[in-house]
Image 1 (tube, rainbow, N blue to C red):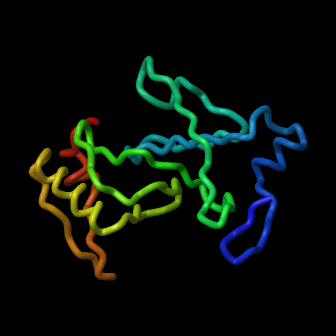
Image 2: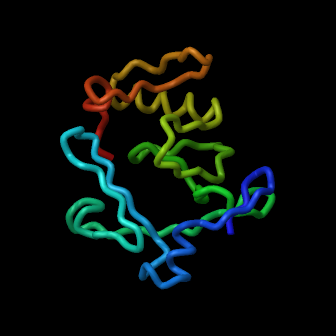
Length: 153
């Protein structure tokens, strides 16, 4: 059962399919390509290791981290260190991240965001950041501009 922040509970599709024996593993995988001509895919009940990660790499599994209230109400992972390539962002208060394939924004505390933007600007010479219409500082990751300039980390 999944419990959201308001206390409502619901059954998770993956757990239900696994309990019924419809899938072999209670996992799912997404393949979302930045190339619009390549079809994206979701696999429920497993993954194709040939499609995920670089050749010769292995998948890393991470346990979900409960919220401060002890609930598993997001795909939240623990964070031990915040890095950009070989550069470590010191003195961070970030202890978890939420992985959400349907989110257009990745939010983080302003102090850590500024440090990350300074590192990106230093490594890539991409302008620091812009302020969007909601007053949030953002990093423009558009495929035709900054995305192509990002280093392969």
